[in-house]
Length: 236
Image (tube, rainbow, N blue to C red; front, side, top):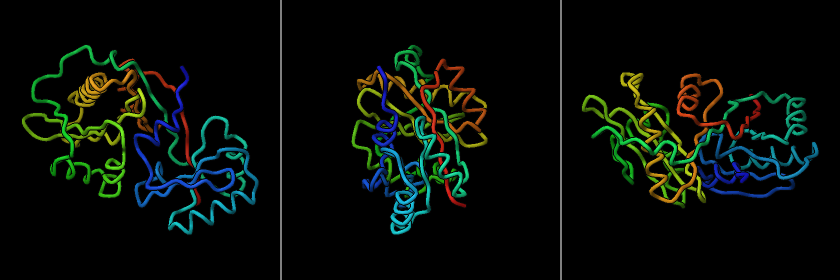
């Protein structure tokens, strides 16, 4: 079965609002980052269409940014000619949820809670995930949870997991620097898989920038496979 990753991302990490303008879907991000602010193409765009999208994003108080997926090569070339730079190429990883739900999580290592506790908000804040991105989590309408990680009896990391259809996606996985390299990422993904399985998800997925070698290595080591990719172009 072919999955619609654009819908899964929008369903698990939603913008504050969506608007169709010509061949583009515009997103109102309200400060929540590229993923909820970028325009994406629904069909072939002319230069005039791009002009209109740029004006609309400016009217929303947002920078000009577009999300390019496979099949958007023509738009990618048009934006390059207009001086847009590539930003944050990413991989989308996926695996069956049961694949990572086959081992019990070590005691008192990962806790599933919703809504996020204050200490979780503080950990996210240290990684630049502030109120605007926490508002994105609140907007997700399907089953969702947040994960609190503990190491050496101390809060050590956080993650957000949400479902769209039968796919669960992990977002905002952050581990405090002093607690890294202790396998917490590994166990976080397994805890997410157990939660996903228990809530009816068939698949577990995660988005990772291609530049993040550590995270890419983790997901490959867990047996997850690349199922999609995209990148942004923005005007500096």
